[in-house]
Image (cartoon, rainbow, N blue to C red; front, side):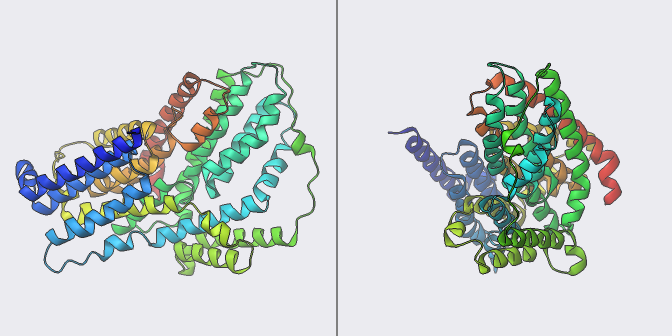
Length: 453
């Protein structure tokens, strides 16, 4: 039996075992939990196993959360409970926000605007290797704020591969270029709510608690962290892999770009309108999700994107987001998050809780999906009495800043597949960046973010 089938069979056995325990009434009695909380804990453990092991595709596991919530948990809740919130998790304002982001990404890629932007900036970096590296980091980070970081990493590697080929065989600076791109993509995702799923998940959970965070608010608190992390990454890579007396050229950047076409100008207009709508959402009364929907209507209604483009949208990411929010609704409705919060002693200091959350986020994201990590940690963090807003933001930041291994993020895997460096090279730089992110997140939570609350 293939490995995947064995893992799937094991997952099915675990699900059946937990269901049997719950049916017999032992699980919640043993832990002293109310029946709904016991069921929710079973759902959490089953889902955590499936997300961590990836025995099933993550989006299938996410749909399983909905099935277990409706068929298993809802009947155990108070009479008359209607599980609409579980269904709503799969098509909320957050879903429309990400649909808009995916649409912008498709437009920029399909019509070559992202590549033109990268070439335009790199053409202005000159031949000094430190400036070329800085330009690559800035372009990768900026594009990852608006596009999938996986797509950005793939595109940037297509641009940087000819540059690396010009370097002397085995020169260490090639590692700086190859490692810098995925790391900058990961860091850039922090900058906007659509840059990476943990950001939007955190905003959705906070919105359920009454904190309606705007697109502009998120950028205001995240961009300083992004800038400092990029600066630290640049200096770190130059120190680990010094270029020496190298001079670099980028042939693609030297090629003159043709004038922008009418379609490209139209895309720039749609991009500007959408971003402006996101930034001014709190003043116009139009939600970020509705702005994203308008972007989708403009892109597909104008014919710029067509049915094949719609089919190629990363729907699995949307279902993963929905599954995470659905899990949070299950944990909250069952009272399990309140039970978990009650286990933390009232005298526990915020510093201890904060440090524990940061370490958990960094450790889990190093070896598993950052979306899954955020979905597991945020429901508990939001229920804690000790600054849930700061804890949620810290989780979102760390879920995108832990990048020590090739499996930590898809951009890391793409870079590792180039064969230009070993796991040890990525781990050495990645651990330092993760530590920098922990320090900056802590300092921002103490001195900077409270200014915006």
